Length: 303
Length: 298
Image 1 (spheres, rainbow over the protein chains, first blue to last red):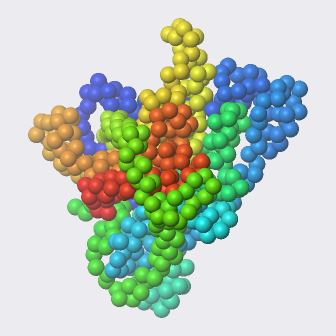
Image 2: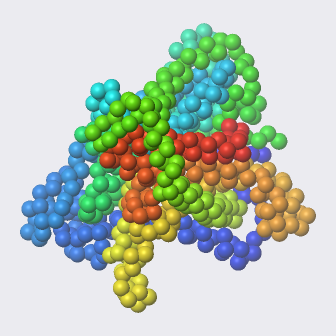
């Protein structure tokens, strides 16, 4: 019998010979190495001293480059400073945080509404779903180009909350929609129908029944949309006007000169995202386990 | 046996409750946003691609010369050929790499917490900052990077080599490892879904693990493989930053050439190329969608 709430099932009993286990394990190690060695390298390089660059061995060490993210003078007024280029990321970090927060809220709200509509499988629901998923499939560069040319023809100023937010929601909302649909599909509609029968209005049933059950998907959608927007490059190019976002600044900085502050920033972002994701996965697991204990009825597929 | 699947199913069973059909309007904000932010801009570049323009601005006198220039340009067709060649190499590599990884995780590892941990290790970084993961390649593979430093230290190389960065092979390697998880994911998911009685039956009839895989599992996980190809193809077609940062712009891909046109504000020309790019990408996606029947298999 399959599991009820997505915990992995035990693997079917296949007897492997030692050498075939090793042969299959090698690609796993290779992939893991290509993922984690670069991350480890930038984590180490972020602790360079003031004269250090993008190379080994470290010249001196310390948290100077981390401090430089909020205050450039720790580098430029350091006695060992040689006058090399340094980058100020503060404004782009603030811009990216603002844009990502707005994108994640808008994406989640309209994706939740759309998912609620799709559940009823109305006529045209399939086409509407494909239309939403176009946001993932269409190359971001083409969307950015279309938005910037159109805005300039119409005399709209490109910026974070004009052209920027439009493109970012087009990108993040379909992912929010998928996250929400996955949970809706394992959600028994009879729970809501019970609320209607008991006289709850549809709005009330949504806020007191649907939303609490969907909490893991809502949080997941907020989280993924935030991360997608915070990191998005293709849907940001050309269209941010004078408001630079972090990926734009990072990529242009990398092409000029690589400073350890780029690595410090990278290490911070990677650690923060990892922590958030671990916390999210752990909390979702807990929720599912609680549902299982409570005998939460399952969705259509198991009826 | 009821098979539980967290699938995305659209439009299969008919609506049961009349009341709920009235919720359809709730899809309008999302659809309007797609219309405004995606359909209209795409329509705009289709229009602009027939305009004339120089770096000082666009003029609305209709012309087909942007397309004529592209379609008769050897450089353009060279780029298209190279883009598809790179795409095929990447797809082959992610398949050869992703299948064993997914299989190892789903079948060889039997301890549950190790498997969960491994899945986490494999997938999570792919949700974390793509631009930063791309940047991390430079200190590793650059001229003064660790690989060169180590290889010269131990005497394999006499002098640091330029080979590891800003070359076509380095770009392709980067693309493979940047996107391999999107291959592992759907295949692993399919392997997990597979009815284990089938495998048990094959085993009981004396098939080796390899034979079981080739004759029983592989045909059944094929939709997962196609979905992986779909994900990776779409991402490779739209990727222009890797080409620039790791390929050094020396192995131009289609999306990269759009960018270079747009950067110098040659908007009509860039639009014409972008239209070509979108058509090629959507055609590729449509072909793979047909193969995979995504809405039933995801």
